[in-house]
Length: 210
Image (cartoon, rainbow, N blue to C red; front, side, top):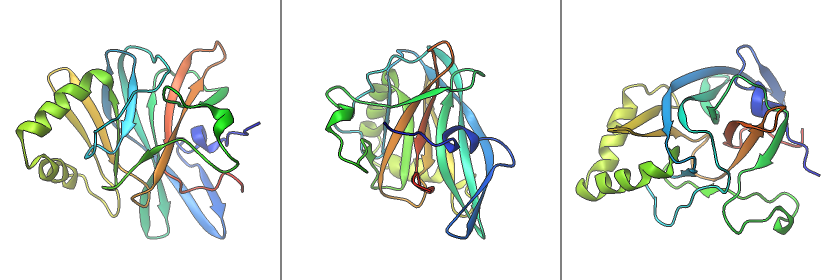
């Protein structure tokens, strides 16, 4: 049975810190704006590679919800350690892997995860409804990569940044991912009444087996 670490929630609390291998990680929470969830189907991916992406099997709440980043201060460096959509003020009491159609927990070997590959140092949250608008924007603009990075440069701080992409009612939360390229798993948090209250992506800064 998987034991989900408390830092999936605690890292978003001001003043939270943890020491691993003699290094102190001190956390701050950054609200980067609200994302519109119009279909309830959420996907995560590298926003510069949206080919063959799919939404999670969960049906998430509809509405506009804050996207928050748990930023770790690590000596002279800052990194985004976790990103989440906060669907309610209720606290998660249970976590599950966010899975795509056909993925099964019993197929995982010890230490394995399901996740999305990042090759640009960026990750994102988007509702399935935003995918078509975003791909149309990318197709019409050969330099859309540069536009995204230009927008992210406006709030850049060594070494993390973010950008809320918008097109009419569609929004996509884009952010830097931990130390860059890797494979990153998301988790769904449920409150005491069994309702979804969080989705969190872990960018592999902290060790689950501490």
